[in-house]
Image (cartoon, rainbow, N blue to C red):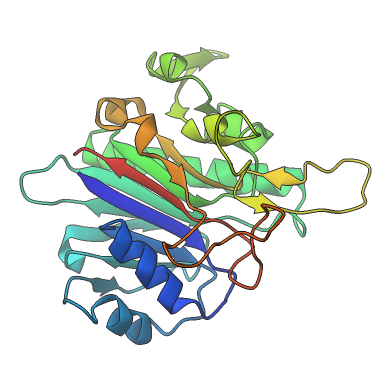
Length: 269
C-alpha cells in the first residue's frame, strides 16, 4: 500500500504540521504546492526521529516539491510543463504507475478559457507519457484550481474526469470519431455536506453574484486501469495533524496554517 499526501501550504512556515501529518499517516509520497520551506530544513524535520525520507529535486516545474520514502531513481521525471511534473514510479515488486503532480493557474487571475488550455496541454502530455510506457496506470494529484464540474475537468480534450466509478470503468468514450480515455474523480463524493465534512478543500467568501463559497480545487484523479487498486474509503480531506486543528471555529480552513486543506489517499499497488 502506498500513501500519498498533497497539500498547497500557501507559503506558510508550517514544517512541524507537515511533519506531524506525514508521520501520523505513514505517508510514502509527500507533495507540496506553494512551498517556501527550504527543502533541507523540511527534510531534517521529516527525518528527525528516523531517517526515512528523500528529497526529489525540481527541474522544469517549479510549482511542486516532492519528498518520498525512496530514492530519485524510483520516481523519475519523464515529462513536464511549468505547472506540472509527470513522474514514473517504479518500485521493486510493485506495479509501475505514472504520477502527474500539478499546481495549475490561479483562477482569480486566469479565465475559464485559460484554464481549459492548461488542462488540455497537461492532458496531452499525460497521454504522450502513457503511450511511451505502454500503459494507462496514471494518477493526477494537485491543486487544479478548478471544481470537478468545470469545463476543463470534464471535457473530452481536457482531463475527462467523471464522477461515477462505473462510468470510468467503461475506460473511454468516442466524440466526433475520436476516442478519449476517462479519469475517475472521487472528489465529487467529498464535495458539499453529504455525510462527510468539510465541504471542500478551499473556502472563498466574496460578494460577487456567483460564489460557491466551498471549492474542491485539490483533487486526485485515477485512470480506470488503477481502479482495482483504489478504495474510495482510503481518500480523506484532512482537518487535523493530531494535535492542531486545520480549521477555524466556523469549520473553514485556518488561513494562519493554510487556506487549503490537505488530501490523503492510498493505492494498493
